[in-house]
Length: 377
Figure 1 (spheres, rainbow, N blue to C red):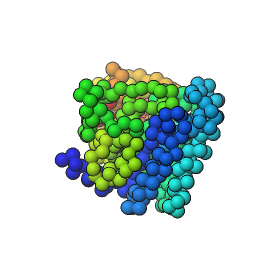
Figure 2 (cartoon, rainbow, N blue to C red):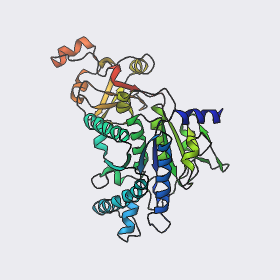
Figure 3 (cartoon, rainbow, N blue to C red):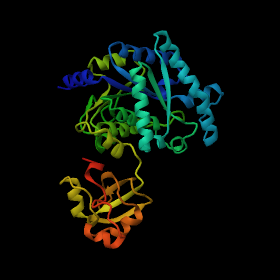
Figure 4 (tube, helix red, strand yellow):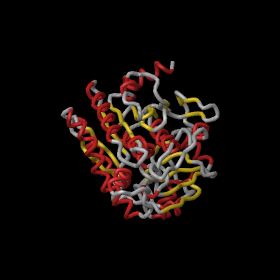
């Protein structure tokens, strides 16, 4: 059954996002592994030759910059880290482009920031640009804009893992392939590779062990978090070894490579992907028992009467997280009221809002059409 499932997923993957990690692209001495980059570019060309559209999310800019500048250790100072990334980014794209040009293909550098994906208009612009590049037959090479990003560079987990998941959801790609320096997810208690994960819950996270070598920011935990974003949106993920020069061809042939994470639900709409799986929430609204049931089980909108409390500085149109009294995340949605208004109307019936605020623009604090309910958290 697992083999049939892989073949079905491979056949349906007309668009594939491939993410390559730093440890795959960097030699032991810190140099950029140009031969490996050429192999990956060759594999991507092979996928395009059989009619697949490919998007590449590539790490390695900081590592490439460290080598060019003669550094042996990743800088901790933000300005220096951004400078190293700026130096290395050109080297990284140049290395890919050399192979693509041999096949008369064009590489297109796309640098993204978290703010760009948070804003709806820029989110759509980014989506349209990537899709237009694919129509032209170009290969979008996507990376975080490390020279202007602040929070992303200072985090401990690999932001490019999450970025790859967000790009997959952004363009609705049926498959994300994450190429790592390991063959997939291992059960370390038995030292065996797990071929298929049908439910990405905390028991899977408990199996992994990460290491910190000072070069790569990510690890298997980061990849599992990224995989969860994609499978929640209704798409599939495979984590496999990036050291194998033919791994992508075997994956699209439906062969058993790495660890497959199976989609957890039907594919959700682009609008709800943005609300529930992309935008960073600006606040939290906590619900009473009745409102939790209405939102989670009955498919209802959120009314003011079911709100217990709120926190954070949010305004109308911001995405907020809905939680129960114990702090469990239930959903995310676009709020029709700001924090100050929510504090005034919580616990009220809809017809009482007019008396308190002097206006009643919406009966619902969050309409069901602008809400994504989580099946599990």
